[in-house]
Amino acid sequence: MPDNSSISFKQKLHYKFDNLMSKGTIALIGWLGLASLLLVIIAGIVITVTGLAQEDNESLGFVEAAWKSLMRTLDPGTMGGDTGWGFRIVMLCVTLGGIFIVSTLIGVLASGISTKLEELRKGHSFVVEKGHTLILGWSEKIFPIISELIIANENQKRPVIVILSAKDKVEMEEEINNKIPDTRNTRVICRHGSTIDLFDLEIVNPHQSRSIIILASEFEDPDISVIKSMLALRNNPKRSSKPYHIIAEISDLKNKEVTEMIGSDEVTLIHTDDLISRVIAQSCRQSGLSIVYTELLGFDGDEIYFQEEPKLAGTTFKEALHLYEDSSIMGLRYKDGRIQVNPPMDTVIQSGDMVIAISEDDDTIKLSGKSNISIDESAFSTSQPKTASLEHTLILGWNRRASYIIRELDNYLAPGSTLTVVADRNETEQALDEQRGDIKNQELKFIKGNICDRKLLDSMELHKFSHIILLCYSDSLPEQEADSLTLITLLHLRNIEEKTGHDFTIVSEMLDIRNKELAEVTEADDFIISNKLISLMLSQLSENKELKGVFDDLFDAEGSEIYIKPVTDYVLPGRAVNFYTVVESAARKGEIALGYRKDEFSHNVNKAYGVVVNPDKSAMITFSEKDKIIVIAED
Image (tube, rainbow, N blue to C red; front, side, top):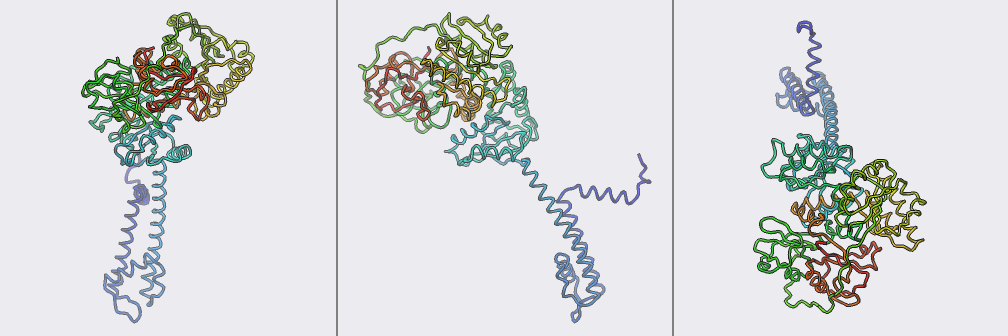
């Protein structure tokens, strides 16, 4: 280390100059202003002391001399009319100093503005918002989430969605503008930063947010990023005393327990693989069910609300089903917080209980006030539901959700049913062997092969299978390539259907909603767009986390679920009836009728594949034998 005495004055001056330049734009402007002031004062003193003045003019006082010096510092052209060589020389020195100072000032200002614009581009400025929806992370799910929140926010005043992601701020804004050009009355604000960094989290003001959605990373170990984000939020020393409303997604069931422990009561978790698997397992046995779920989970159309109605106190749940004209009651939220979908029909509604209703909006859940409701009991069907029969399921393709689907299917199938898996992955057979001990009602079979191989598909006698489930290779292939294989296989299946004359019940899993529009030419019975369903669920829970109890009940094999049953189980086909009649017939079986599916529109995308949820109960409708009724029932 050199001794201070060996450091030259020039080195010390250079060091101080470097420190001065590193202090930033404001400090540099201050120093330049001070230099300008010093130059003006010196010039004013010189002119005052020496008595220099322009020809034919009296000597100037200090203030007037300083002012003239300042004008020449800012504008070199001002000295053009000066007279008297002594005065000219002083003003020339002032002007030259001014040119240097002003030029430097312009450069400093330009650099400072450029730096500030770059900082704004990076998205590091603090978000001064309250009551906003905060999204942490970035994935393809973010676009349907934003779209749904925009719809939900239409009746709000100045709603805001704030996004924090490691992605570049400008790139985020461009992608959002391209895919969601109309955000209506909602402002979308993007910020660049790490979702696990306490400093970056402070930028998006999570403490005053209305709800926080944590998206899983699209890279390896997505649950790790979710867990770290939760820890960063909950353990922040600056956090608000008010509980957070956090909704997070996890992929691996093994991480659920530790995630719940970290989140406590502040976090609502969605196990993505489990949810998609349940929907696929239920939808493959009931064509059109995924359309019903999409309708209930989306904000565009009818959705699920909680509402207390004092006038219902003392009435039974069955009586309440008929008291709403354009809303459908599906359960109760008791005053102690318990949620029950499809409670016993003789349940008496107490003061403080809330109805769980399907309606167009929360302000449309109103009692009809009708005292005389027309119910045509002569149109009730007397046929008995068919007994459970053996079912044969075919799964084409494989991913980590397949094991969940097989276990879930086992809860619904009669003993002796079969399940055949066709895949070209070696790990598939091993995974099936590990499941055999847990499966009670199905015989598991495995065929190794390419699901796009037409010869293989032709040789399998597909008409013998009750249901066909087409899974994408999401674990081993990129999203678009996985969807492409699914689409090709779908085209083969529909071509086989046309040639053989056999109708197949096909449930197809896709990742990208854009590919669904391409796949609709295949007329597949149900499309399970994984990312879209998860996005809808996250959006709904960000608005009301109590909906988690409703969804858990509906998607669980225990208790009541949504079924699509033959219309002949409830009313006679060919008879014009109102939906009050259907509701009453279902209620006498301990079930809740939510809507219907018209078979004639089952392949018409513009008619929602024939699915109608929450119809006007007074409107008359004539069902055909192939039509179905959408109900909530225990089996």
